[in-house]
Length: 454
Image 1 (cartoon, helix red, strand yellow):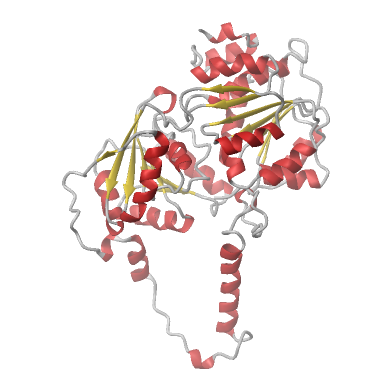
Image 2 (cartoon, rainbow, N blue to C red):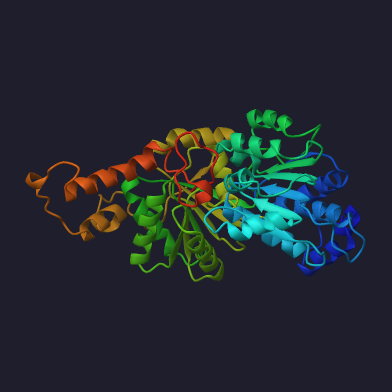
C-alpha cells in the first residue's frame, strides 16, 4: 500500500516522496488511519520501524486541514509532543520539519541545557507544534509561559521510558493544564502491562496498534553474547575493534564517568571516540552525534537515557559493554542498529555478575542468545594495568602528600576543600543519583524523579 492510499495531505505526500520513501512500514500503515480518524492511539512496535512518522504524518495532515490551501493555520499551539530526552526531541523536530516543508507551520523545541529565552518566545508567539521534555516545559508553564487552550493533539513518545524515569508526576501536572477534549497518542518500543493501565488516565478509548510481540527486538539484528571476566572487557573491545567491519560502533556504558574513562582509553589506543551522557553540555552532545554521523568518530560511548533519540543510519554494531539491568533497555539499545530493515549486530559482554540478568532477558524475549568466543583473544589473561582504563588513569595522576597535621577544621584550606567535595558528592549520590533537569546540570533532589537525565 503506498502512502497516497492512506489519506494523507497531498503536500505531505510530496515531502515524503522527496525524502525517498514510497511504502509505509507496518506500524505506519496501521496507525496513520486511526490517527487521521481522530482516535486516541497506543502504538507499540520495535525500535527502528518508523514510529515517529506514524504519528507526525497524520498529525501534520490534520493540522494542515485547519487552514485553507497555502495559508498558515491560526496562531496557537495545536500539538504538544513530549519526549524523555533532548536528543529525541531534536530528532523529532528534524522529522517534523522535513515532512512539513510544504506547509506554513511553526515548530519549536523546549528542553534543558540551553537558554530559555528563545523557548519562551516560541511559547509566547504560539508555535503550532511544540516538542518538549517534561522538566523544562513544566518549569516554563509554572512561569505562565504558553497558552495551551487551543491544543488539539498530545503525543507521549517513548511513553514507557518517561513513566519509568519517574516523569509521571510531571506529566500529570502538564496534562492537567491541557484541554480535556483532545487527541492523545502514546508510542513506544515497549509498553508493559503495568504502564499500559496508566494510559487510561490520559486517553479515551484508545485504539491499540501493535506490530510484533511487545518484547521482540528488531528481527534484522543478529545478537551474540560474549562471556568474559570483568577485567578483560577493555581488551576484548579493543580486540573486536581490530575488525574493519566494526566501522560505526555504539557502545553502552551504565555510568557517565565510566563512559568517559572508556572513551579516553579508546582514544589512547588511536580509536576516534565520542561520548554522550547527561554531564555533557548540549553543544558537546550535538557535536558528539555529528562526529559519529559523519564518521569523524568511529565509536560513540553512551548511557541508556542519553542514547534515546539516536537515529543514525549505518550503525554496524551495538556493544553492550555493560549488560543492561532491565530487558526493556536491551531492546531499546540494540534497536539503534538494524533500523528501517537494515541489518546489524548486537554484542553483549556478560560477566559472572550478569548471568541472572541475562537469564531474565532470555525469558523476556522468549529465546536464548547465541554464546560466542572471539577468535584469537586470550581469555586466560591476568589483569593488566595497561589494559584497564581505571588503572591507566590512576597511574597518570600525580601523587599528592597531604599534611594532615595542619588541619584546623572546616575553615582550613584542605578541610574546606573536603567539605566542598563532600557537598558535591552528596548532591550527586544523595540527591537522587545526580539527576538533572533535562540533563541541564542542575541537581533536582531526591524527591524530583521526573527530570530528563543522563
